[in-house]
Structure formats: structure tokens, C-alpha cells
Image (cartoon, rainbow, N blue to C red; front, side, top):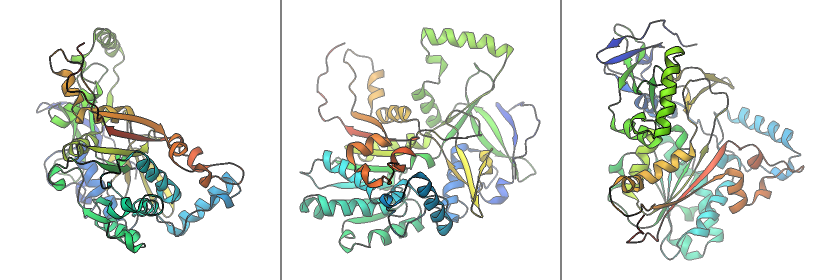
Length: 451
């Protein structure tokens, strides 16, 4: 059903602006409960992960599992691959196959090879995977280590999956258990990786953290401004009195996580440079003639997760992969998500994020430069930079952003996913995905040079 829009003019109410959008019966669907307003990130989290009504809880298997690896060298080319993929989707009747599944074992083997090439093997190898799906990545990485790493590395290693979905946690144990020797090295912790208490005491030892297509499903917040120069306001979702419908409400920035994210991105005009202030003044003149509302989605879930990881695992090395942009997004705002549902084998994209009522996926593009800024901020770099003093700030992380093709060519075996005519779906069809690698800077000097 298309979202219903009201023609209300925004009006001041208790220091907030009521939005003009009103939508479906979110409260009766179970996604929202109670009468208190909630932030957009809480709505996104509930729509995706609520144990009773969330998308990943309601669906038996939104993530597909292939019975066998695709033999790319037996396919003629792109047309044959698309036909084969279409048959697989119809056979399994699932929402999607992840790259680690479509290109198993080679995708995960590439990640394992990158770890093996750069890890300090004098200490036991410890890998955390957040949101491990069906367990295919874990099994393939353990396979690779068993076949290619020194025996002591495989025998002493630990692989911990942190999984919020109970059904997927069970599936991971089943998948990894196909190789009996893997089970002594593999554990699943059914919990939310964002919550700091679940990690226990800070572990100062080196480890690896994998996040494959995790960032796109993390909760985001939304901020709004009625024109080009007015201050940003945070968006809340509120039940319409006497109705099961919900509406957006705008309030001045007050949430610490939203405010911090706004500062990291540099959206706060109060801290603008001289040239930025001149631009801002020009926009002020324009906004009086042609006012244009602004909306921006903020990766506050990512910020909170990175905070947690840096606190719990300060010596971690991180590998993340995700979508750098999404095509055909109709929801307004910078970094806006794609809201998609599948019924009777047909995929439908929605124009309103309110349409996600437990039966639709909500996934966001990842701004990898912003991810890098968040990573450095959570590691303490920005705090050092703002402190008064004569010492030059020192980054605590070394980071690199690579296109998926570049990552695969550097660490993997791209010939394994190439068809007869040279077409390679992993290199050619995933141009809107990237890898982010972040490792601790070990040679941080105790005394930096003066500026």
C-alpha cells in the first residue's frame, strides 16, 4: 500500500515541528508500542530485529544458502550466469544471496588470505564475525586456515560469531559443524554486538573483526531542516492521538549520539570555516526566495558499534565490506536507505521508510570516508586533535578503502569466479561495494614532533 500523506502545514508544538507525513498503522502492526515518541533509529531497529515483529525474526530464511558452489568456469558468460542465478532464487524462494554465499568458497578464502598475510602469527589467531548470516564465511575461513595455515595456527585459533538472530545462530553451528574439527574452534554468542556489556572486560590482545554487509542494516537516525540554513533538528516518531497511525516530529538536537555524529560529519554550521560561512550566508539569501527542506540520515548505529568495539577490543584489526551506494533510492535525504520487500517472488521498493513493518528490509549505503572518520574518532584521534597543546595529533589507526575488485585481485583468486568468455560477476557486478581495512598503528611515538 502506498503511504498516506497529510497536507498539514508544520506547526510549533512543545518546541517541536510536526511533520506533514502520516503513514500506516505502525502501532497496530507491533513495530511500535506505547505512546512515547521514539527516535528513528529505534524504529529501524524494531522493524529489523524485534524478536516478535522484526524482519529478520519473522522470516524463516531471508538469507539464502546454496547447496553447492557455483562452477563459474562452466558458464558461458553473463547471460548464462543471470539465468542460473534466476533459477537459484526461484528454487530457494529467499530474499537474497550474500556475496560470500554466491562466491563460496573464494570470497571468504580471500578474506582469510588477507588475514593470514598480515596477522601476527606469534600469538593465537582470534577472529570475531559480527552478523555471520548462515555461517558460510566462518566455515570457509576455517577451511582455508586448516588447508593453508601452519598447523599450530589452525589448531590454536578461535572464531567467535556474534549473532543477534537466534535462528541464524543455530544455522551457523550447523554449517560450521559440517567439518567436525572446526567445532572446537568455533562459538556463537547470541547477542547484540552494539551493547558494550556483552563483550565483558576489555581485551587488549590482537584480534580480527569481520563485518560483511553489517553496516547496511545498522540503525540510523534522521535529521531535518526546513530550509538551507535553519538548524538541523532530530526526527522522532510519535503516535497520532486517537489513531494507530504515526507521524514524524522534529525537535532541536539534544540526543548525544546524533549531536556527535553531526559534529563528525561537519554538519554543524556553528563550527564552519570563514569560506564555509560565506557559502552559508549565500544559502541564507537563497533560502528566503527558494526554501528547500533538507533531510540527512546519520549512521548512529555504526558510531555506537565502533565505540563499543574500540572500547572492548582496542587492538583489533577490522575488515568491513558493504554497499558504497544504492541505485533507485526514492526515499528522500542524504544517505537514504532502500526499503524493499519480496512477495510471491517479486521484489518491491517502497517510497516511505514507514512501510517497513517487519515484512521489508531496510538497508543503507555506507559512506566509507565517513566510516573512516568515525573509526578514527572512536579510536581517540579527534579528541586528541581538539585538545589544546603543542603536540601534533597522532592517528591510532592505519586505514585503506578498496573497491571489491581491487581487494579480490590483491588477496584472492579472481580466476575462480570467471566465466568462459572472461566475464567475472564478482569483479564486474559489484562495483557499488567496497572493503574497509583498519589496523592499529603500532609505532605511535611517545613524543610527537611539535607543529
